[in-house]
Image (cartoon, rainbow, N blue to C red):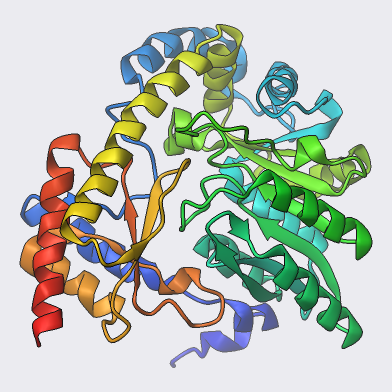
Length: 406
């Protein structure tokens, strides 16, 4: 007897899409085992920048703590929540208490909880276009209709955003949330201007919306500019802040947090408990050690210095070898977007770059909410060693010239 397993699936499976990037990531991993690959595909920090020996030393204290082998409260280790509240004041200029803080499995769980508790099937969420692919996929699994708003050099086009919100509401659509990565946006690397941040908050107030601020890259800013979190500018309690230590301390730690109004925090704690019991306690205690000992700023400063050099090397190489291509110039984050000629498909381009020139990059189309971006590629500058960045760009340029000459 052959069992038809589809009969046992819930209706929600109709919202589930597989990640189109997973296939190319698998190919990159396989190719990397065979030959040396110059990878611009990653979306995480350089493991050689992270002080792993320090982590090993701190781990002795972590595992001598009896709590390390047991559950913590669902909302996180009490002392870590205290330290995150202090962190929010220092780095985000946001007054917090432990009642506002829930420790999560990275920023990803925080975003999933927001969708789980706040989005009904058929409701509209506004995002930047392009936006973070995993948020798009996750929120669509919960039935959200994602409507993207174009990004300009200084962030989301807030005037277009307001027009879209107005038209959606006038047509009877339910719109609750605006999702944004305002600093070092993934995948574009763009950082939203202060003026647009103010306008975004005004739009949320005028149309009674909440803003989900993804602060994943807030702590990797490379230029001496004033970058204020939306939460620090929020006078009405309209911003839900999603924080993460991943991009500075390491993605494998899986420690992020939600900063919520207390009334929401109570519901989020109740929803989170049955799903994971708690975030990994050893990771919580390691981050606690880093924050208590004042080590975060030292780790962050070294990462900023290193990634700034890598960013500058990549931008210089792009401008030297592909001067006619449009590309973003990030002041924060880890990414650069490049627009290839319109007739070049980024998927086939990425596959050929990997197979013929052993350079890994990511097609950016899945980050776009409307099926556009078919000729756009995303490059990561935080992961590759400095001495291979220009060589990688040269190889991409050779492939580009081959495509253009055909």
